[in-house]
Image (cartoon, rainbow, N blue to C red; front, side, top):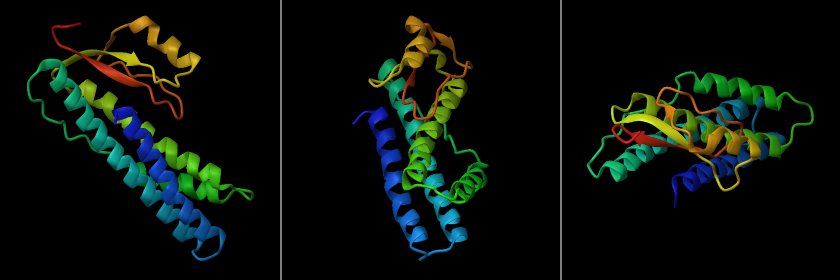
Length: 178
């Protein structure tokens, strides 16, 4: 399974987990406060797994490129994630006609975004990387293809533009190969 497929799978797992929480909330088996806490916690957990996966994927990609062992960087999720996700869950559940699909969309998009952010941060921090090129996912849109700029090598500290649900990824360019 590719990195991109694993990140999508994390999003789908998160969507499945929030389904049970949302259903319990709708059936009044749990309070709104409990639902908000659980939604934030489960999505934050998915984000943590996505960050760890991004860290491992970057190390594996560099090992493959260089042919020597490369350590992970010990990337960690943003410490503000739980508070931000708590606010997002509270906001969504406060919508009078909130749907399961809306809650699932949040759960799916969050790990994808967390992984992208972590991978980008790893590229900036890695002593082995001078830049990156955009790899457009198979379902990449016209905007993603335009952002690719025909394989332009971007500096390591240049952030990769994304949109919600974007599964494009950065391919690091090893020092000496740019």
